[in-house]
Length: 286
Image (cartoon, rainbow, N blue to C red; front, side):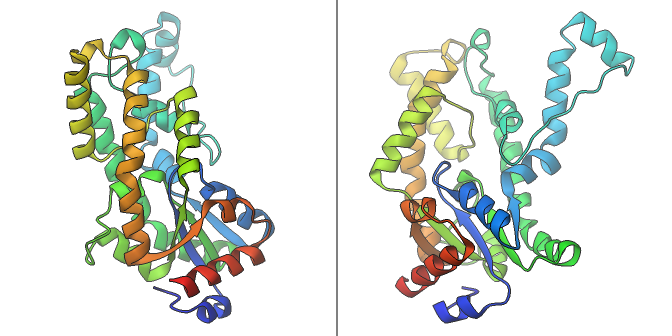
């Protein structure tokens, strides 16, 4: 690890961390707090994906939908209107909307082949955005004078790396420059996340092997064809399974590449000093 002892972490003039774990457990919360209260640069992997690597795909999808409306089609063809994504750190809806959900077209679903094509685009984009992290550490220092750096990773980071492989390209690159910190949720957190997702199911990235197996199982269990699937029903069904699939991968990332902290401790942080102390304790406990 870049900081092998708590004293090395505390003494470091520049602190570089990457926080990872399930979406909704405090990664963006703590990143925003560090940015707002201390001289920390906040690098959002999802924002980078949605702007640098998926922005053109997202905008083209908006335009394709607009071209179905005669008035908008005429305006687009004459360059009279401009359509773009307004993605922000706190609103990643354009990215998730583009990813979509598989199932019946009349219910907003995508053909499974198109859905998988977009999943593949996201995988490539996420890997590239993660590998950009070190360059942004240098940019933050050179442009803004920020030595402290927090990388706010997406919940799917564990799906695009092999945490048991000591030669994994992405994890090797990240661990050279940052301390990887797992925000670990409890069973109660998992139940709450499932309940929240059930109320508002949203698209997300899945590991292709997991997704193909889940799709085949869902079709078989429900005796359905692809175009008969309710998209929301499928992603609700898959979500809890996805969390169970990710948990051991997160754990392996923390065991082999970093440290772990509890989600309840992250949510309670109110200052960069408290964050420093929490990470020091996590390094000592490793």
